[in-house]
Amino acid sequence: MLLGQEAVLELLCCPVSGVSLEPLDTNVLVAYSTDGTHEYDVVDSYPVLIRFENSILDKSDIQRLS
Image (tube, rainbow, N blue to C red; front, top):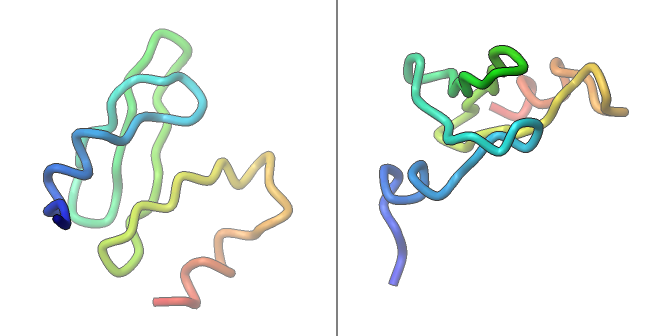
């Protein structure tokens, strides 16, 4: 059985802090934790849980996929 988008969102957590992600708008998920706020893009309904400042990927690489 496939899960709906809302059910999947409930299972996701921030890879940095481990706290739950909340939709800020349709294109951004956010995690509010004691070590700060972490934001993640949503591209074509897929959350991109990459911290670009610590990655070999560039944010523009992901945005081109949409």
